[in-house]
Image 1 (spheres, one colour):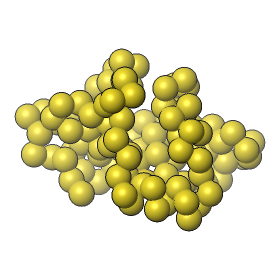
Image 2: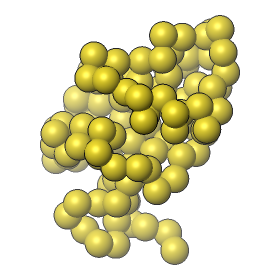
Image 3: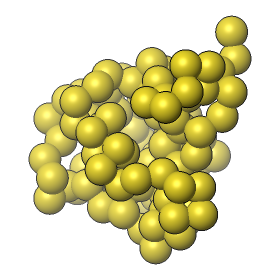
Length: 106
């Protein structure tokens, strides 16, 4: 799903600002993200804790204009990162598209 038909193309800096002011009603999980959480045994509470309480280690633009990868430290593995793929819509909702953990690249 792409969110490039917004009135604005967001930058990584915009995402950082949006995340800092994010409220619970602006965080949306897609059906795909729920499936990935279950398949990969990643708890929704863990994802919310990271988004609301931690600063990302890095933010990278993903495939679409308003799609981004957020990188957080793993809560269970010191050598892994939690990766959350999000999209930002025109109302600055943060849509969780997918999540996984992978080995940290040094």
